Structures are given as structure tokens and as C-alpha cells.
Length: 384
Image 1 (spheres, helix red, strand yellow):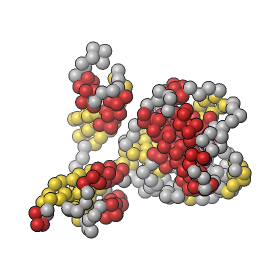
Image 2 (image 1 turned 30 degrees about the horizontal axis):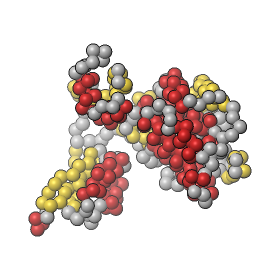
Image 3 (image 1 turned 60 degrees about the vertical axis):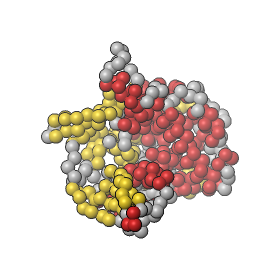
Image 4 (image 1 turned 90 degrees about the horizontal axis):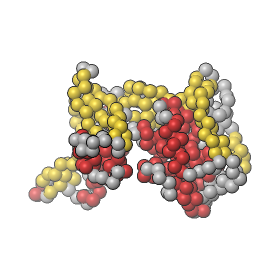
């Protein structure tokens, strides 16, 4: 399952939160989890709204505080003592760190000396940590975005009047496919940019996917174009044609193989594996294999050539037959776990727990995945 962000009018923290709630994250769930932060003196208002006859969800954070120039340590001191999950804490801190890193670079400061202004305020804190809570609830495999509209004109902020995009925003977005001046206001904020940077694989305008749900987040600005963020939940339409990219390696430190495999999956490999072999002169080595759809072939090839010791790869056109699939969720006494279902001609023939979901839930319950699996499947606890 994937999320695809269509950022024709950019992205901000409140638009993102609205879109994810509109997509199906229960607002009661979000409010309950945010309550674990121990932040007071704010109210979360969630309601239906629209722009140019496109309806969606609007989120507003109303708060009362005079001092909001927090630094990274201050933010972490809000997040770390809470009883939120490790996933939510780590992702929230990652998003704030991305903003701090960008601010430090554009203002030529050390990261620890950066003081957040707008991003340090309660509304941005709720937007960012709320986003992490929503991503954990949705538990998707990958997140992609379209080309991201940054906006135009000028914006008045704590640093004075700045051209759009703000310096921190363009620093965060410099590796993404972007566009300017589709609208005459700040379309993408540093908060929105950091959220996208933290969770997405990258910007893809040509994506084949089957859509299950659509979430629409409504922005604050009123313009001649609909100021909305659309987020799609679905799966990539899988083609039977794939490419097997392989190389033989006998001169690289095996310690690097783990990261190579993780990164191959992160950039879109359908499968990746390493096979022990013996090469010329009896030297032990491995064959590194990656299966990829055509649209990722060049990316996977370039990655292998740049990040391993090989001087070349073999590319083979292969065909696959795969089950139709979807995902469901099982609520247990230990928490919610994601389940992958496989079908032939619309008939379900198998199901399995998603290992990443099983592992996360096992950690939260201080068990091994093996122990948790047996407790759920064998119903060892009568209250299961």
C-alpha cells in the first residue's frame, strides 16, 4: 500500500493533517494520541470546508502563548518524555531536525543554536507530531509525491519580508521536482516541505496506481485556484514485465551489503537478494540481484554502479506472475497489526502478517516477533 501526494497547490502542515484525517485517520484517535504530549492551552478544530467547490477537511490549531522561539533541544524535551510510540517520536524528531538543518545552513548557524520561530509554535508542533501519528496509523509501505508547487510573491515572517519560497523551504526541497508561481502566495511552508522530505521516496509525476481512498486537506489561503492538497491511498499497478539487474562482487567489504539491500528496497526494487558464489581463481564472492519495474531500471542500475565495487551489471528482461493483493488490519489486545491478503480471480487464497508491522508491535509489547506471532495466531491468551 502506498500514499501519493498531489501537491499542485503545495503543502503545509495543516493541509497535510487535514488530508490524512480526510483519508480516514479518526480525529478521536489523533486527539487522544496528541494528548500524550502533555501540551496545554491549545484547541484542535477539525471541520469540513472547501475551495472552488472541492470539499475536504480543514484543521486549525488555536493556541495562546507568548514565547514560541524554541530550539531543537526544547522540541525534543516535549517529545521524549511522552508515552507516544518510538515510531512517532523518531519521525517527529526527524522532521524537526530537517527544518533545523535547513535553517542552520541558510543562516550560517550551528544546528543547536537555531531557534525555531513559526515552526517552534504550538500549531506547528501539533502539525508535525500529528503527521507522525497519522503516518503510524496508516502504516503504508511507501510514500511518493508529485511535482511540488512552492508558490510565489513574498511572505512576512519572523525574519522579515522574504521572497517565496522561503530560504529554508527551498533548501529542504532542493533535491525534489518543484515548480514556482502556480499560485501567488507561499504554497509550501518549511513544515510541509520537511514532512515530505522525511517520509517520501521522491517526486514522481508519472505513476500508475490503483486508488482506494482520497483525502483532501484544505488550505487557509483563498486564491483563483483551489488551495487544496490531495493524498491518495492505493497500490502501484504492477506490470508483468520486470528487469533483473545483477553483478558479481568479490572485492567489497561484506559489512556494506546490509545497507545496500536496505537502500535498494527504499528506491523501489521489487526484490533484492545476495547469493554466495565462487568466482575465477577460486575466489569466494556474491551475486547481487535486484528485481525492478522498467520505470526504476536506470535508478537501480546507477545505484549499484555508484555504491558497490562492480564495474558493470547484467540486465535481463523477465516476466512475473503475481497475486492480486490488498491489505487489512487486525485489532488484537496487543495493538493493531497490518495483514497482507493474496487473491486469484477475486478469491482470497492466503494471508500473512506484514513483518514490519509485527516487529513494531512486538517492540511496543516487549516481545520478540516470534512470541507475539504465536500469542496472536495460537490465541495463547484467553482474552485475545
